[in-house]
Image 1: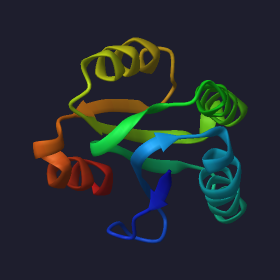
Image 2: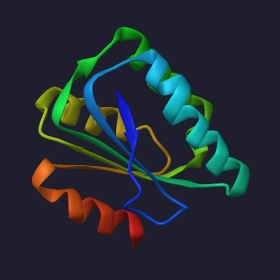
Image 3: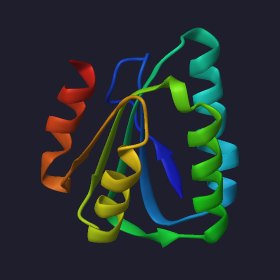
Image 4: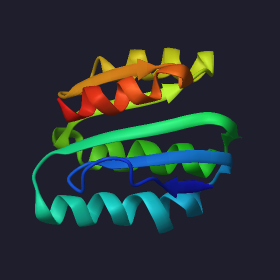
Length: 120
């Protein structure tokens, strides 16, 4: 499941993945929040925390993630992914190279640092 976290200012988005993340989670939680923010501003600063409770992605969730990322490609100003899952960190670093905004990966221990980086 995806849970919106309200630790950042209203002009930024933060989500935490808990358990298995599904395509329905993207459609009902993440995508509406992204669309609502883009209705108010042109750029997004986004934190995605895949912490200790995260167990994996349903295939449809990975498809929805790719779609929302590509649909708004120019809008992603800064993206922080916080995870200790090695394959996710590697994938984000690889795909982040193709994004026009800044993308950084942080460990779970560095969650506060990721929030500070987004706010700079």
